Amino acid sequence: MSIHVKNGTPAERESLCASCSNAHIERGYRQSEELVICRSTYPEHLVTFRVRECSGYIEKQRETLYEMKKIAWILDEHGHTRKMGFVPAKELQDKPAEVELIFDREH
Image (cartoon, rainbow, N blue to C red; front, side, top):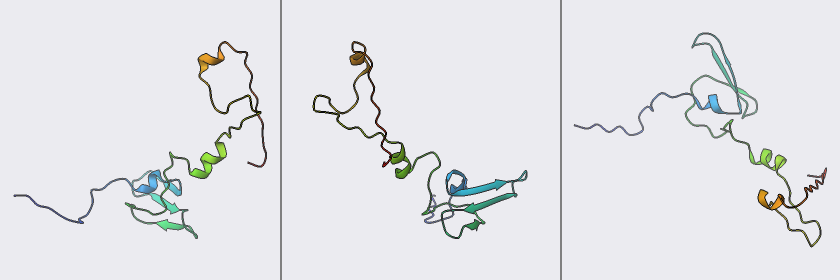
C-alpha cells in the first residue's frame, strides 16, 4: 500500500533567513531565543516563523549584479597595435613585464 500526499506539510528544514543577506538574526543560548528581522521590506518587520519561500531572498554567498559590476575590470584597446584581453602566462615569459592601469572615476 502506498500513500501520496499532495501539498502536505514539507519536511522541517532551516529557515531561508539563515542564508539570506537581507536577514538580521539574533540568537540566544536557548533554541527558543531567536529574533529574525527582515530588511528586504520597508519598514523592516519581525519574522515569527521559519521561512520556506521568500520573494526577497538574496543568498549571502553570491554577489548581486550591482556588486559584480563594481569590481569588474573594463578592458579597452589602447591604440591600434594592441589587442584587448588577457594573454596566457607562457606568452609573457619571453616579453618584458609591462602593465598599464588607467583609473576612471566615472565608472
